[in-house]
Length: 116
Image (tube, rainbow, N blue to C red; front, top):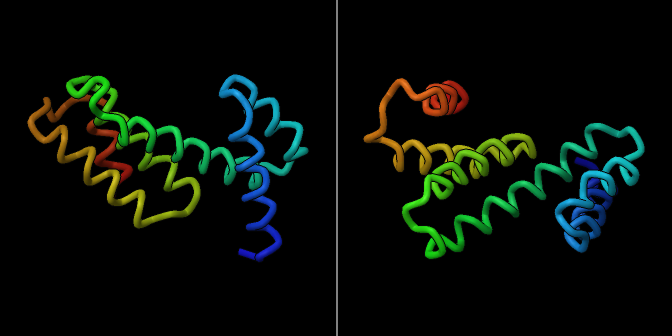
């Protein structure tokens, strides 16, 4: 990726973080002005940050299914941004957390397919 493009992504990412969650989509629509690749990159980074917040604050609801699902969300968001290592690790964490779950659960089937 060109340094100028990465700088543009970083600037938009930080500007979006300063906004309320509800206002970020509208901000990205306007700021990216139809550049779908740019929007996808910034939105992926924002999603990674939000899922990481859940993972970093597990004590709030330690037994909630949201915690392992946050691993899956992080895996998908990291994949969108092209961060293969982070995506792979998050998929592995998700699958490990749900190793005792019903193997036929749609979310597990989808995650296994995506992980490959």
